[in-house]
Image 1 (tube, rainbow, N blue to C red):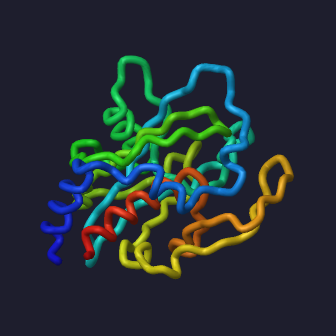
Image 2: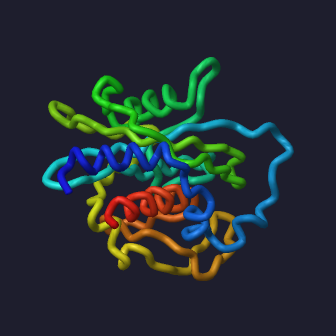
Length: 210
């Protein structure tokens, strides 16, 4: 399938009823639904899955900084962050992507979004968007205070069955969770909310490949 046809099919499926939790749950950590929900108002955030073509389809993830106040410190995630006052989710995703990895919003074509996902541990409802990036002339640069590393993932590797693995995970509070599903992508462990959102993206891509 040529690159233009892939994007056309992807855009069609993103508009044609998302699989939602039925796909997200494939990568859901055990005990996730037992995390107490905060009584505070739910905060809103937006993320971006930056998709680009360079000798094959690839997308970008980041490793978050190790800031002690970040409940997801050091984890692999999409570029993204809080939605500011009077800002829509799509605008926030574009702004955060530009701030965190230096992809100008003018070189991103929004082609759709995945299902929102609530993250109990941080009390965020996340709106994940997919952007087609024109990488010509772009020099990626990690935002020093929030991003440790920029990670490039090959879509074909992501689609392989061997990309999904399981291991025991130790939480920041010392709790050990057994048999947690994760994606092994570019030798990085991608789990939790990001893996759940990626699971929905993977399900959609599998429909295209049929």
